[in-house]
Image (cartoon, one colour):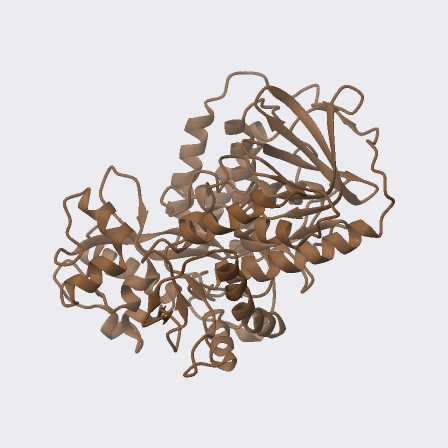
Amino acid sequence: MSSAPRYLTSFQSRTAIHRFTDVLVIGAGIAGLRAALEVPADLDVLVTTKDRITESNSSYAQGGIASVLSPEDNFGNHVDDTLIAGDGLCDPEVVEMVVREAPDEIEKLIEWGTKFDLENGELALTREGGHSHRRIVHALGDSTGHEVMRAIIAKAKAAPNISIWDDTFTIDLLTDQGKCVGAVAWRPGITRELIWAKQVILASGGVGMVYRETTNPPVATGDGMAAAYRAGAELRDLEFMQFHPTVLYVAGSARYLISEAVRGEGAYLRDLHGERFMLKDDPRHELAPRDIVARAIFRTMERTQHPNVYLDLSHLDPAMVKTRFPGIGKVCKGFGLDIAKDRIPVRPGAHYTIGGITTDMEGRTTLPNLWAAGEVTSSGLHGANRLASNSLIEGLVYGAICGRNAAKAARAMPTTLRAMPLNYSAQEDAPTEPLDVSDVTNSLRALMVRKMGIVRDRTRLEEAKQDVEFWCRYVLAREFRDRGGWELQNLLTMAREMIAAAIAREESRGTHFRSDFPTRDDVHWKGKHMKSLSEGAGS
């Protein structure tokens, strides 16, 4: 299916700079650092991240972490809510495991210094869309990710066996005889570096930047997914991209997430004329799961021919609103909006990549010696639609699992690592004429919004496929020497596979809605995953 080169860059083992480690963790979000912290102190861990360590989707998470922590709630409720949101595609065994391990992970975060918000001396719990009970712990009002990552980063930096490399772009995974043996990376001042590892854990996040409108930071370009694909690992469920219903929309400005917790605390969604349109769309009203709310907003925008809808908090206690959502309040104030009394213009934006690298319950991928955790994976927890605030807990639970299992596997291998005679040279006929990387990137991101967005149909998907395949033909064969070029190649690789999966799934389920197949089809599609596997890669 892929005519692209195995590696994005040339390298020569004989002349390269080499680094050796027991466990290599690619990605420094909550899943990656949790994995690193689970590796025993007698094993060396190297954590790489392509930007600053604070730049990850985990750090930008607002709402909180879902966990059963009150006597009114129980594991069965959380499991049921997750399965309902997942629309028939979750792995019930995975859901049960993550839900049951969640409270212990919350306790560990507290031990490591995370300061969650309290109410009367107890953890303050809120409710979000799709949840039957108040079970979301949060911090600093609406800056949970920032506080959690502050604590976990400090813990990782204090661990003597963990080294952290910022500004390190993982270009590709190294493979030898069908196994992952490390990675080829770029660092400032060092053109190429070969990192050899007994075991590799991918925790590099999602691919939200493939869409023009997204809540994700610029680092979310699917690099880990694309590298795993080129290395021969199986990916699945790439048709499922979760669109967050409420992203601040001010024309010409950057997009900012307006947390699910805003609706959890009672905010209303209104159309241009002030009507609460969710009253007619779903019995759960504004607290319906994200896929349902996002499509309702999409239909409302089409009906009113208005570029957005509005979040209304004016009926809530102003003091509570400003205390609970200080970060959102500050952002909105910059646009002259008072969240306690003004209607906030919002529209959906790409938020969470539900599909990814196939993993089992132990965190294994289909490529030996490669493990994966967090948004980079398709673990079976989220199914066709992620339940709000289940992402950070997945990163914690699976990060811990991957850290334990990778450490065990590394310990069973020979003590001494050595560099292997791996070499790769770019194709002799690779295009060399100038290419405007920014223009192609922007064109791709705009195309994905228009033709691979919230509502899809075969005609638009086939048009998208044709355009992306054309770009792939003259971009993927090139050898770039900078981050922007590699990110474009990864975005194109992921877009091509996402579109192919969306064309193949001829039904509507979860976040994947086909207007030409508008109903869920359990006869042909129940429990069926769309798998994507690179042909001939991994050698």
